[in-house]
Amino acid sequence: MIAGVYQPGNSCFHRATPGLKLAALAIYAVALSVVEQIVLLMGLSALVLVAWQIAGLTWAQLSANLKLLIWILLALFGFQLFVAGFWRAFDTILTLAALVVAAALVSHTTRTDDMLDTLTAAFSPFARFGVKPEDAAFVLVFTVRLVPFVSIVGREAIDARRARGAGRNPVPALVPMVIRLMRETDALSEALVARGFGRT
Amino acid sequence: MTITFDHVAVRFGDLDVLRNVSLSLAEGRVGVIGNNGSGKSTFARLINGLVLPTSGRVTVEDLDTRTHGQEIRKRVGFVFQNPDAQIVMPTVAEDAAFGPRAHGFSGDEANARADAALALFNLAHLKHRAAFTLSGGEKQSLALAGVLALDPAWVVFDEPTTMLDRNRAKAAMTVIAGLSQRVIVVTHHVELLAGFERVIVLSNGGVVCDDTPERAIAYYVETLT
Image (tube, rainbow over all chains, first blue to last red; front, side, top):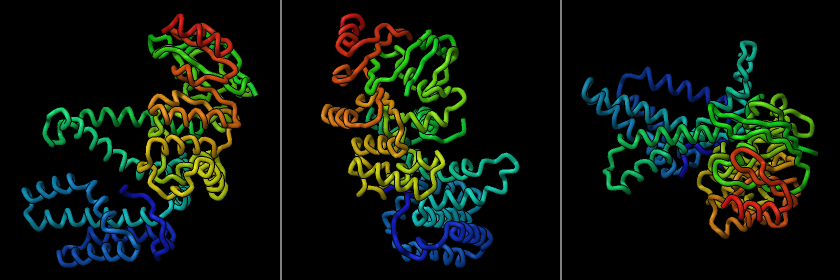
């Protein structure tokens, strides 16, 4: 199961325009950040789960998206628990998780081509300042492709350490992971140029 | 329909990777062989402007790679050794359509080209699959489909079989043999070049033999291995 990849379907979310979905996502993010009562926050979080169901997406897909974040959520929870107490920690990770699920809902129900067209149109007013709308849009969309890529490289780095007798601690695997990511991104950028991305 | 190297040299820092290479390529099937570090991958990358010469010039149908890179990459497809590095979009269909879109085709035209290319490799039923979940052979096919979606005149393969097992390597070479495009294959597996028209042997950054496959491979085997 790969996070962020378009899943064909015919729900109202699939039929909605990418612009509408991005606007709704932005409003949802603002709502999550301004709500202070924990009950309201839980209600808002539950709302995205209802939307997930309506979109016809599965719980396995939901779990795949959250799995990518699990270490960050745990680290944030621990830090906030230490400095601000349980409810603040709970509030922080619930907000972040709900936002990630909402963003995943948008990317699971939107074709990359449609998203590219929408973002290209959104960036076009900035062309007068030297921004290349197609390139800016592609960079944003390409990030989705990198999420599973980074996750796979990270998992392989940890597995390589474990195969040689090390424990499950992910921290020592960071250096080989970063080195490999740098190499792989070099290869990816070469492939992008070979396939026509860029203007030279 | 000619690719020309005119006194081409490539230098990375203090390292001379290619030295004074001059030749023209017009045949339908050209092989480039050499040991590791001989400069053959750089030779391949010069053809569609992924690497630019330090001196001299490379032209494709009279277009200079320095000034017409984008135009040349439309005519010369490049298939990398590792298909994972070549797949840049989340799903199979989106990845196959990436090249046409990047070269300015409309969404519908890009999708139509992608569908046709995927059908060539029996990948049409996988079009909505996440590209990362494909098997090694399927990824290799997708990488080639993504290149053929642009219908290039030339396809350059950089070590197309190095990461494949024997059966997949054979299958890949069958696909390459069946292409209507002109093909340049960079490899150190000389058995892959049966039926080619010309084979170039590189060593230490220079062309040391440029002949029929039989003679060039014999030279390579006797002198360099």
